[in-house]
Amino acid sequence: MNTSPVTVRFAGALFELSREKGSAAEVDRDVERIGAEFAEPSVRAYFADARVAHAEKRKQLERLGAACHALTQNFLRLLADKQRLSILPELATAYRRFVLRERGAVEGEVESARPLSAADLAEIATALTPYFKKQIVLTNRVEPALLAGARVVVENRMIDASAQGRLDALRAQMMAARLNSN
Image 1 (tube, helix red, strand yellow):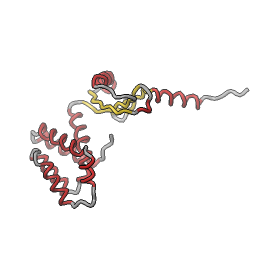
Image 2 (cartoon, rainbow, N blue to C red):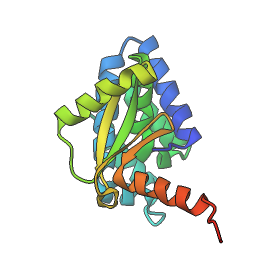
Image 3 (cartoon, rainbow, N blue to C red):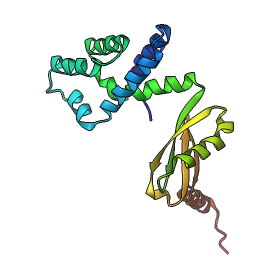
Image 4 (cartoon, rainbow, N blue to C red):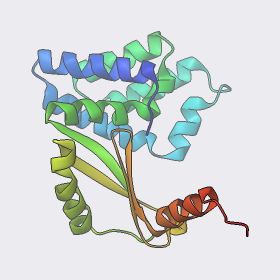
């Protein structure tokens, strides 16, 4: 969930410029499409491979950006010129946070022992909205070690309502308890 400061800086610049130029919707779509491309392990591996020449990576990036808005194309060229192609895998995540912040929302993650439905995530988000005083957009990650319940992480705060969390807390209390020796 952490994103590099360089990626955040570049994503923020693109976000602000897209709003300033009135091309927010187009650039938002472009960044999501780029994020989907870089979600593919083969694409990430290609751009991370030091054996691939920078000129080849740039050509591939030009093909990727061909259907994008002119502002997005210029941004991709800037990244290539500045040797910052390494930020592309995290770009969509960082950019999405700026979009959510603009809407007064934050993203979070629910870890659960089993997959949760969209209705379950919406119910959890609704219950947590008053606590965070923001709209919450949740994703689900299955973590079988939790046994039951859920663990929610939003804005670097964790709410642990899992069976494993309760067992860990009970274990800590028992270990801290003093034993009477008669």
